[in-house]
Image 1 (tube, rainbow, N blue to C red):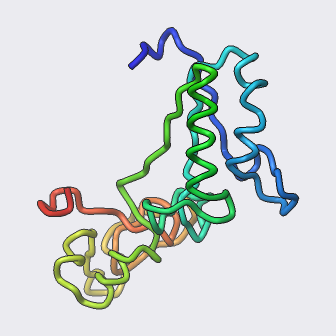
Image 2 (image 1 turned 180 degrees about the vertical axis):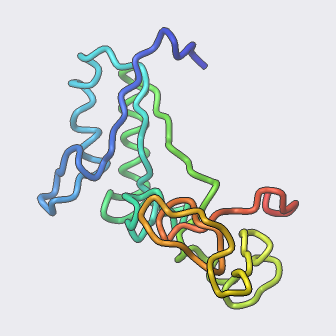
Length: 168
């Protein structure tokens, strides 16, 4: 990997970058369409914020499915084209992968809520205090507290318990 101190990294939030189909939602084809311009800027790396399946409570950082691209952004074929075209121009792609939490819609979290012990161990669940208050005084950056699980982001993002052996 190239020394980042000598590289130009350009962060792209695809949702607002460039919309190629007129639905008001930027897409992967929009990034591909602007690669020549990005290259003219002297960019070595494009840092892509999440574009995986997400309910979008936290602008895509609340990932529901890391295996699939959110249809609002395009398809796997669109991403593969972006990757090929970026490589032709000498531009590398970095994907912003947020593995420390998942969407509350994520399959694992839904299984945890349903009582599956394996998946309950994937998350940080804490009982509330005896007086009924939250287990910590931590507040979500989006406001509010939760009484049954630890949330450091949006109320729809649940923290992953990394010490769980089969989770890693």
